[in-house]
Length: 371
Image (cartoon, rainbow, N blue to C red; front, side):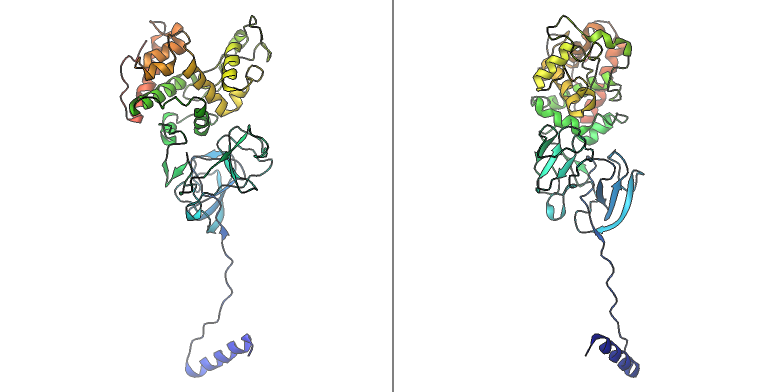
């Protein structure tokens, strides 16, 4: 007996004996599969998708840390099922693994973006790029290993920021609290990507000393950039003054090319040369990298902090790990102008920032705060 005849027979039988026959209905269309879960620490650019609260969302433009559904930057793509379906900012996929958006040729990526390539492997952007192939450009992409436990190293799990690779003592949440008005160029991902260049930074000494050094660096950075607002020196009249033509290599990028850039406002051709040589990057010929690549900018700040004494007698790193105090970091960065009564208001601004940051990190500021 055909299915149609069976249904007709049951309906007729129901009329006689008073049965209610439930006729099968067509199955509803299944919901779309959830994309990789939204991660509060990841950067998304226009067109990239993420899942949150069992909905897929598409980024309209560049965004980081803006929750889908609560920010206009996200367009609701409808309900989804399976996959990751994130609700708390995790990057873990279903089953405790990790899932990342597929790499798209020609799509712009920024430092810290993580993608899955067609070979099934994950890659993290180590420099901003317009969609270069992860397997060809080792400058712009590095292999990335998922932790497989519902989150990524340096990402978030259950909405709580975890320390990134290298165990940086400042979480992304704390970083955002320190710099609520920061320029989007100064990314947390760029900072943590730069840490590998100087592994002793904020990893030397007791837990208190580690946090004090991180606070001291970020406090000086805050002062130099107006709270991580300025990428380049604002007084353009100074630009032509930073070329020391007596150096044997001269100023190949141009007379006005070596103005202050980055978190500690790297300036002068000889500093670009020295920093570039130390980092393995040709900054003498390409000084603009410091204002276009977040990780490189952070690396130049860490280069000065860890290797240069400036007008002081020790590097800022040594000042913090050897107990000389925050005041000596000021002396090493701008002591000839600010210390010994030169500009007490500027010194106090640095000290205020340091005290705020140590308080946020839950450690004492220590002694010798001024210079």
